[in-house]
Length: 227
Image (cartoon, rainbow, N blue to C red; front, side):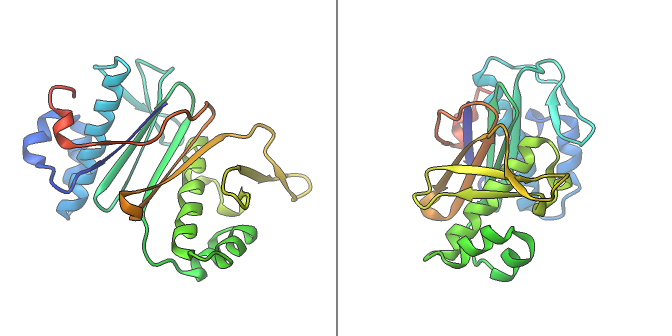
């Protein structure tokens, strides 16, 4: 599995427009703010770089019934993208994968109480660093939702993330349609979660395959000649 993240705050979108797809340009042009345009274009640039690392230089994108993009000409290769503030992230794998990156900022316990599962809320409430713990759960839940392909169609109350006291074992419980009880998922996905950029960002990856690598920082100069 490949996991990359990149700062796009200094991206020159005029110089890179020719390196992204027409669909991506159309999407980026709909944004009003320059920062959002950079994130949109930067995400595809990082994806093209990532795919190039596994020998794919001619990606043809399509979308499944839930709107999740996939490679029409390389269906055995899976990828996912995320962005937040100044950073974009990409994960590439040979099995379904989800990635989420978020900037760590003030966290509202009200949001956790209303939108997170009860056990997750209690974990955050009892933490000595609520902001960090809040966003740790946030990226883990988002990465799982994206890995399933359902995204926001999967209700936040339909599953819970369980982290042991050492933070080394992460498991998913899902709601049993018959009993309504939360039970450990029969086949547990793999998770990875990291604090990046001096603790300013949190990134998580969830996949059906083994997560055997750490996120690698890519700088804009790394893209030259490789996209």
